[in-house]
Length: 50
Image (cartoon, rainbow, N blue to C red; front, side):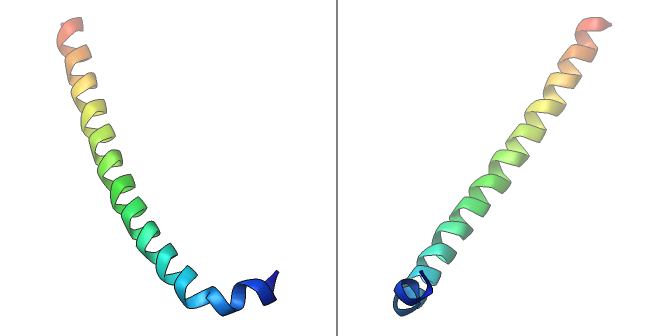
């Protein structure tokens, strides 16, 4: 396994870094959106109850 992967490591690492940073940004953004929605949902529920 190692022998097969090692020659491509720089490319693989570069691709992974590209993908991981994109995924990380998307995750952060989606998490922020989810938090905002949750807060808005809680606020809406609070208003409905009152």
